[in-house]
Image 1: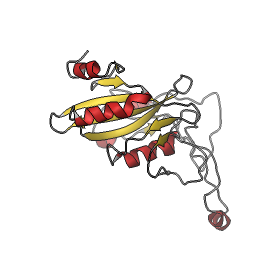
Image 2: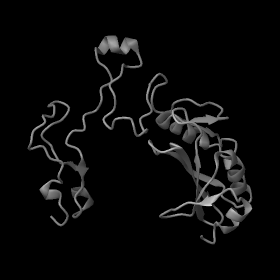
Image 3: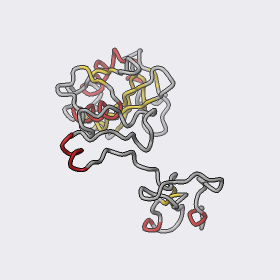
Length: 218
């Protein structure tokens, strides 16, 4: 246990330390998240919400977790708080807009891309995709290349005769050279024989190996 979070765990026994590769982190029950975040802001000086995001564990319950990355502008310290959402297909989490006004757009983004409902949010709307878009693109069961859907405007569909198409993963997976200047390290596809104009053809020669000229040390 790090010395930084020991008093926090003592003040809130419901919290547990969470494994982290960088900053101190704790797990917080959903029913306590507003109480704990208020305590961290008002009594521990974590006054800045750096980021709010989510994790989709897919085949594990609870499937979704919301992550709060907090910073103390006085002590220059970070802490991460993670709370599970209630619900699986329709996850719900308490809104923290009352604590940090900037959580407004963070929560809208998590709602848009993960489908998490933030209870108490003053204006929970999509922020990137259009309102009628039927999917949540950062869920792990959403295809990496996307899903073909109708344009949000019927007039636009009539004028263009097109739809929103899934993007081909042309040449993927992508790899960057491990040596050389940054200008020479632009990611390149393992298979550059196909793109949005030339469809990929499956063959025994198809490969996802790293291109030879991108191998480390070459």
